[in-house]
Amino acid sequence: MWKGFTAYLFGSRYEKAVKSSLVCLFVFCGLRQAEVSVRIAPGILYLMTGAVTIGAMWQDLSAKNEALAGKNLFMLPFSGWRLTASYVGALGSYAVITRTGILLAVVLAVSPWGMAELTGCLICALYSILAAALIYGESRKRRLIFLWTGGSILLALWLSGTWFFHAILFVNGLAAAFFLKRVDAYAFYEGEGFRFPVFGTASVLAGHKPGKGVLIWNYFFRYLWCHKNYLINLVILWGVAAGLPLFFGQTEREFVLTIGCSLLTLNTPVCILLSADPDLEQAVRTLPGQRMRFVLPYGMFLFACSLAGDLIFLCSLWLKNGQGRISDICLALILAGLGAAGSVLMEWYFPIRRWKTQSDLWHHPRKYVIPGLLLLLTGIFLVLF
Image (cartoon, rainbow, N blue to C red; front, side, top):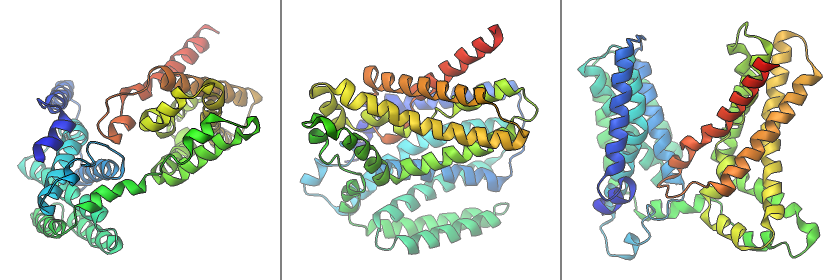
């Protein structure tokens, strides 16, 4: 079971683990050679490590990963705790190597550290894996476990400068492993129920009645409502839009508008709708006339999401500077339209294939292509004109 999960995640020869380890090594050595020095308190270092690990772990646990969900393994006789240990161990190793490893390579390269800090980071990552799996698996006692986990983390961070930090997290990690052993392995299999099923996708996309195009918009809103992490990401992006003007200081207004509106097109979840849902993509490409029935409404939906963030950004900028222009709105409309069109074209002609977990989709380098092109084009336009 362990070999099956790890081979699916890392490849038959663990090539993805080797690739991620080499990337971390190059990043660490490159930043070390740059001689960048930033003082990071141990508590902040541990908090960053735990937050990234538990976030990546929770995202992978709650996402639909067809082979990773263990459908074939659940058809065979198994011991519940062994399947749970294999599943959680493989998924935790993947989260640490591909996500937490990058963070540790950066922060350890630019800040002074010793064996105590390194050990604390590893214990914190291990505890985050076990805590995320326990909270996810024990859905009936989720609030109680969440309070216990949060309290132990706060107590440990309060004592982060002493050996009590390591002792508290190690003991809590053992307790989490003990309770996780008693969790029914089917709790992780049934976790697919948190994902919104593509209900009626074929009938909606078939469009038997010309006047029912609004059903596509219903599908988009239902999809967002049932994927709460997409909504949370959207709200966070709008919060960033509201606070973004404060970080530019006395930068020229044109460059602030260009950078802000370009960055706000970086809305990963709603820009990977087809890549994240192979069933939907198959229905879209199989049924006739989908370039008008689905792709156009999808582009308008992305345009509305981007424009909402741009308007929040413009309002915040106007409140900061005390003035507004019609040209600002025109620029926001143009960049939101270009960003939506580019994202739809990328999804239609260059969908992301052969991804292992949904974290791979959210962090795929393709998401930087459209914002980077918009930033480059508008920068050239400002320089020339």
